[in-house]
Image (tube, rainbow, N blue to C red; front, top):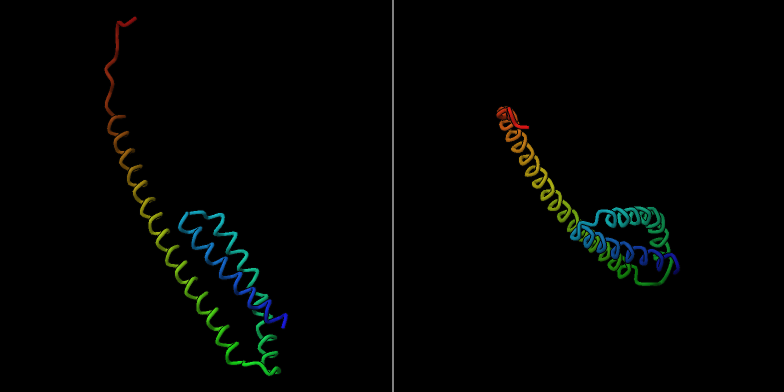
Length: 130
């Protein structure tokens, strides 16, 4: 069954990409993360198209269909868990970035206040200095 092999290979590739996403998030490598996400998006239409074909083949063959469905569900469940884990990692990274942005904004506001308070004080004129 070439379609079956292709389907399971696609799910394994998705798992590798999801794992690479996890590493990219931890390393704050946003370019790699986007590349992995793009690759996953390209896999999804193939999986959507091939899955019904594979299931139809299982119905028409003498193989243990229940075992194949169980294997497929296990792969899908693992992917769902990886995706959820990546989502949580990304949310945590976003929270850290937002906190850092707020800290930098506050530092900028403090600096402007300091500049305005020193900027309004007149400097003594230096007369007679040649």
